[in-house]
Image (cartoon, rainbow, N blue to C red; front, side):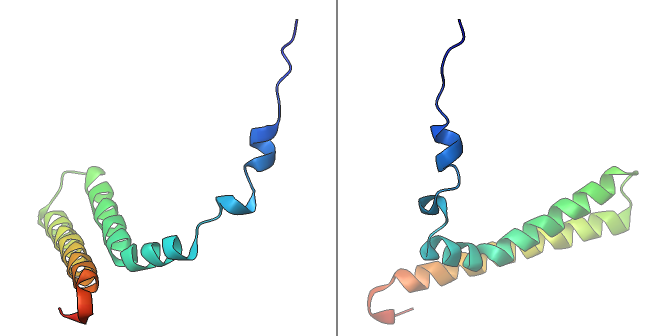
Length: 89
């Protein structure tokens, strides 16, 4: 006997309510510098995997980590400043 299954998931998988809201898109936009810095860091790490890391690879990874930390710091400072009442930062 074959069980009868519904196609509800397939039908509602692309429903309008599944789209990101404007607030979610704004949050992604604010986090984009952190995301791009993370991508650069992963790229530097992948490049170093192909061979024995030399001084240039180490320097590139170190700089990419610093960019990630700077982007995270800027995002944290920006969101902390926005949450203060009265616009005081």
